[in-house]
Length: 365
Ligand code: NAP
Ligand code: ZN
Image (cartoon, rainbow, N blue to C red; front, side, top):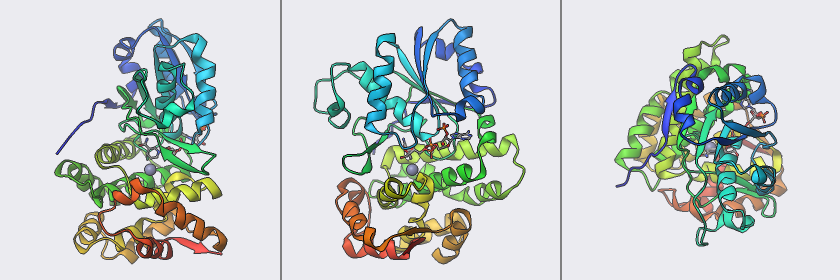
């Protein structure tokens, strides 16, 4: 068994300003990577800027990270920052800018390489610049995972890069979540739920990963209650953020499985947000797993049946409608994703994957 979690993580009120000494240790020049607008509105960017100014650190801001960032997005950010020559990268936002910051940090450390480096670990390359993450959504756990998931337009899908880049420091503060609309909180919390379920029902499950999944799955009813509350407190936001980081710790050890693999086609082709796309397949994934895992997961989630879970989840994320003509190509894409198939602990042949599609929160038009 193996356990590795190299990120120093703080989740607390004013985490960024509280840890200016930690940030100071990273150097005197920082590249900040954000999404398009939200970090300016929710205060996370100004918290980081004020802190950097107070310790005399120079910085530039790349604020063009798209949702589900593409390889082109990463190269554009490197082009933007190369002449500034930053010593480290600070990613602020949801999973998209956090994932992007890791890939940008790798490309900045290796200016002579083109995009081929992103998906090749056999080249003679330097390790990525250090990364700090400030999460503002509550689902991906990217602030504690080594993963960076990029959109590949040439393959019309998304894929995790094979480089493992853990952030060195992550600073979470529930106050940023208070600016997020309900659908972003729900979709991202369902992503975290997917991380727990897919890490628990996973060929790489270990006693260590179960420490995280058992704790996290047993918190689902609390998370659901928070998501359904009209008025949320600071503590509620902190709970959502904490659960999301625990889920990140789980998948750091196991990776994800079929629901994530199946979600990529929905996101790429229909623009369905990541968490909602993953959630679409969760009840059917549990239902098709072996009896022991199925009953363990349902018990931890506090449901009597997959149907009960499915109907609760549908109330949160609804159903997704796809065209019948897309179904076969999505099946093909899933059946060629060897990494996700391998992480499934039960036989994931064409029949099973097809059964999951048919049982999911998906309607075929
Ligand atoms: P996201 O794509 O980062 O952001 C979604 C939307 O939320 C954006 O429009 C963003 O706006 C907005 N937003 C972010 N924080 C906000 C806040 N506090 N208040 C209001 N709006 C806010 O969403 P995400 O679900 O967190 O990340 C999805 C990405 O993470 C996908 O690419 C997925 O594949 C990846 N992922 C990574 C891991 C991992 O382990 N690394 C795990 C799962 C998923 P702006 O653009 O204006 O910022
Ligand atoms: Zn996810």
